[in-house]
Image 1 (cartoon, rainbow, N blue to C red):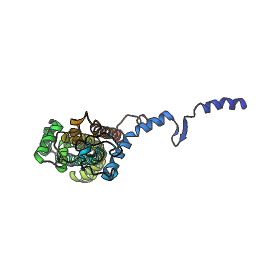
Image 2: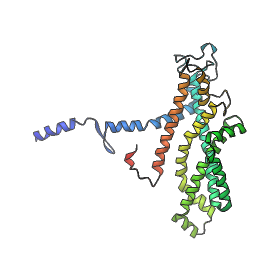
Image 3: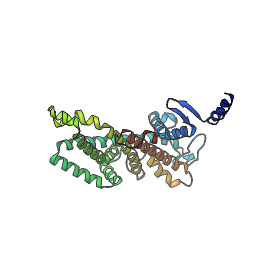
Length: 305
């Protein structure tokens, strides 16, 4: 018995990097992978918190100018330095977080309403209505997204509202094609046939039966389109369009600070890094959500974090 215990002791001592939880033993490398996989969630959560809390986090007016301290590097007073007008980069970055998320979420909502609901309505109507609607959708989709958004902003004018509408129109074709594909797919399902046999009309079937069953596809698509909306808004701001000139969006901050990158590179790197981290994190979350909500996926649940 003592010899057996002596042999068992090294095996137990050789695996101090394992512990038991509800799912069984987990190694430290596995825990590290889980921590790494949770980074996008943390980044998005921090961005949402910053957007909600707003300027109260820094306690500095993002529009206040200090011309005697222009293009200063990070210091105790200015944690990320100042821009070419002596404005606090951190305070402007915080305000830009809210504006970027507002523009992105607003663009996704408009795209969902224009593309998703109208796409369902056109598909349910069928005939010439569906043909004309999707011909117009294909015409919009054939244009480059940034160019289309640029033309719409020029036509609608500056401001967060016109930018949101421009983003919504630009990405509406994506939701329209999702609506068309899911509608015709669900139309062949047995529950639709059963509803038709009980005398339910086409529009009642659409709103009562089909829409609740395809909501997951639209949620997934929204998470994929959201980072694209944020990047497009930043491009518009970088080009000097979009919101008002004094509004501290990330794209506007990059465009203004790029002229003084040799004197103060932090003013450029801060919005670039923030934009990159947020969009990459949202894209990763959208991809994971797509895998989880897709009933036909072949990937094993344990193969992805």
